[in-house]
Length: 91
Image 1 (cartoon, rainbow, N blue to C red):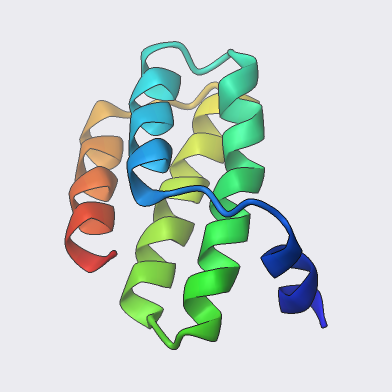
Image 2 (image 1 turned 45 degrees about the horizontal axis):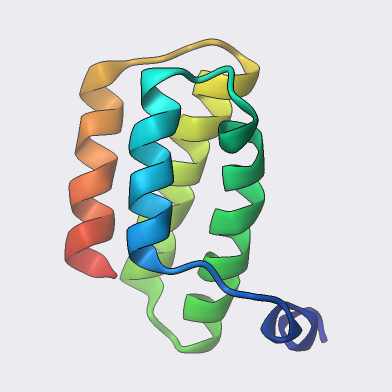
C-alpha cells in the first residue's frame, strides 16, 4: 500500500540524488540535506519494489551518512566518499 502512495509522487532521479548528496556533504546543515533523506526514501522504496536490493542497500547507506551528517553533525569524508560510488555502481 505504501508503494502505491510513493508511485503517485515524483520520484527523484539517481543523478539528482547524487548532486544533492554532494551539495549536502559540502554543508551538512542545509535544508537540502534534510529534504534529501525523504527523497532517498522514495527512491529506495521504488527500487525495493523492483527487487533491486543492491541499489536499495546502497541508497540506505547513503541515507544513513546524510542523517549522521545532518542530525548528529558527524561528518566523515572517508565513509561518505565510499557511498556515492556504490550508488553509482549499483543503481
